[in-house]
Structures are given as C-alpha cells and as structure tokens.
Amino acid sequence: MSVEKKDEYYFAKKFGISPSEFLDFSSYVNPNPPPDFTWVIIEASSELFRNPDATCEELKRRISNYWGIKEGNLLLSNSFSGIIRLAINAMDLRKVIVAEIHADYVPDFKISGCEIIKWSGEISELPLNNLEEFQAVILSNPSIESGRLKNRDELSELLNKLFDIGAYLIVDERLIELSNPSQSLSSKVSKFENLLVLNSLSNSFGILGLPLGYAIASEELIEELEKIKPIELIDVLTQAIARYLFENPSEYFEESRRIIEEEKRWLKFSLESLSIKVFDSDANFLLLDPSSLGLSPSELTEALAREGILVRESGDLIGLGVRKREENTKLITSLEKIVNRPENLSNKWFRDLERREEPIGPRTSCPYYPCHFESQDCTFCFCPFYPCENEAFGDYLEKENRKIWSCLRCSVVHESEVAKELFRMMKEGKTKEEMWEWLLSQT
Image (cartoon, rainbow, N blue to C red):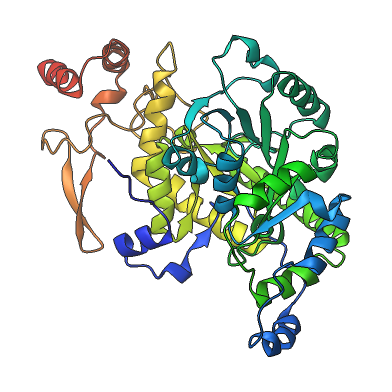
C-alpha cells in the first residue's frame, strides 16, 4: 500500500493553505542566503540558444579545487537520485547495509531489487564478518536521523575493514559543509577504490530548486559510473550559477556555520522555555520529543501544518531544520499556541501523571491554588471525565457565542480519598468508563 507524501501540497489541499505560504523546517538546508546571482542568470541567458557545455569542465575544476581532489574524481548529475541508481548498477549492489540514511532514496534501492539491511547501532559495532554476503554499507554523515557527526578516523577504520572484504562504503555528505567539512572522506578517494562520497548543491547553498548532485570517488570508479551513465546535459543556467557559487565558497560556508550555531542555541533555549524536550545535533537541525507536549509525532506534524509550518517526522521525534531568526520566531509562536491549547495541556498532564508513583496532593506552588478549596488534591488538575455533561457536577456556559462545559462548581476529583482511588485505578489500567462508574457510586 502506497503512503501519500505529506508535503506542502498535501497539507495545502487538506487545510486550504497556499503551498507557497508554508515555512519548511523539514528540509535541512542552509538558512544563509547564497551570494546574489541575479546578474549571473542575466548574463547566462544569452547562452540559452546554444548547447550547454557537456563536459562541465570549468564547473568540475571549481568543485574539485574546493574539495582538494582531481577532476577525474568527480561526477556531476542533474539529480542526486540518479547517482544512486548509477551506483547500484555500476557496483552491482544486490544487498546493502544502511545506517541512518535519507528515506527519500530508499525506493531507488528497492526498485532496483537491492535488498536493504537496516543497522541502528554504532558503526564501530557493525558485525561485518557475521553478516551474510553484502556489497556495501551506506550511511549519512552527519546522520540524517540523529544529527550526530561521525569522526573521519572512525569511518576510515570502517573503510579499511570493508576494503579487506571487497565491499563499498557510500557516504551521503549533503549536510557536512554546514557541520564540519574537515570530517569529510573526500580526500580518501585517491587511496580507496571502494569509497563513494555523495553531495549536492541544494542543502549546502539552500537552493532546493537547483538540482545538481555530484559524486566523489576514485578515478577508476568514476570511469565505471560514466560508462553506464545516460546522456544528460546540465543546463546553461545551472552550470553558470554553480560555477559562481563555487568560485570562492569557503567564506560563505564559514558564515553559514556561525549563523546556524547561533540560531540553534536560540531555538533550543526557546523550545526548552516551553518545557519541550530537545535533543541537540552536530548538523543544521534539532530534534524535539512531541510526547513532552502530550502529542504523537503525527499529531504535532498536523498541528504545525495547520499553522503553515512543515516539519520532519524522525521515528518518535520531530526534526526541525534551523532557519533564519524571523522564521524560527514564527515556529516558536506557533508552538506556544499549540502548547497552550487545553487539550494539549491535558494530554501532557496525563502523560506526566502516568510516570508518577504517588498522587500529587496539594500543589501549593500553582499560581491558581486553591482553585476549589484549601488543601485540595491537585492530582487531577485536568479532569479525566471532561466534559462529563452530568448536571450534578457542572453546567454549560455561554462564551463568545458558543457553549463551554464548566466544572467550576465541581470539586469531587480534588477530594483526597477520591483522587487517591482514581489514581490507583488509572495506574492499574482501568478504563475511563470503569473509573466514572466508581465515581458515580460514591456520590
């Protein structure tokens, strides 16, 4: 069964929001705008009536100089996915071990009939000699799932082990320039024929509409990829923009990393100020735990989409790409609204309550204490039966042209013995109906 991709077009249709109005925190791209290349496009437009340079000689030279490799170590493509498919065929990959890779290109392996073995442990603990025959280990660095940056020495050790058994190492380094490019394996390709490093312009320069991917490998492996590569021309405008961006990108990337670290610190502080559990990363994104809001990942994803914000679901966590301060502020404002919704406050309260071993008792530190009577038990700050709609306990009130169930005159769940018994029943796994039936029998 196919699963509909939940991007801006999916949520735009569902909530009646224009796709262009969404803020995309799900794409971990550079928030620092690249140098203005308007004049480059204008200048290159005169070339549109001629065939583009099929060799991309000047562009290859600039990218090679940046990474300190030979031009023969580089292959360019109009799509990142296209390089993956080339690798599958050139390396004859039938079974691969994947560790924290981008989910978007997993289908390329499956369509090609390549079996995937997922590894979730430490790379250093990968039991290579105890696994059935495989042809490659594929991972992202930094990890697209945890944001952890693996040390180059750690990966070099793995590379040596794979070389000894005749297997490849494929590393997705699309996030490394915004983390720590000194940990890139690009300089290792001249020594290891079993290494393939993948990258693209989209993430590093924050230009999602510039579909230029590239692979770095030994000259021998690049030749094998070129042999089966279909004829494709990188268009004039893409070449011109990419040449300009790689003219001298080091200073731009240094500034980008500084901005990302500054915004990450601000974003982490702001999230934690909302009592949201946050996990740091070495990459240009943070991970938050939606259960700290009393929500599941899909519930928080949808709640934020209603606010015009896209995020990435990553297992039980939510990934948030680091963006500019103005956009990060909008994210925090939207989360404040979600956090303060009564239903979310109650969900969080009950999840926290489930972790407790004893009832709360009087919560005198609460600014609203006592909301019913002195020495009240505050275990059930949010009533588990709301709205009970039983007139013996409450009433409907008119507020802003709508009816709201009010518990103002009900204090039964705050009576110490009642709260203790309801807490005990909840911990035993009794249903809401069973708890309600017991409460009614006591009144």
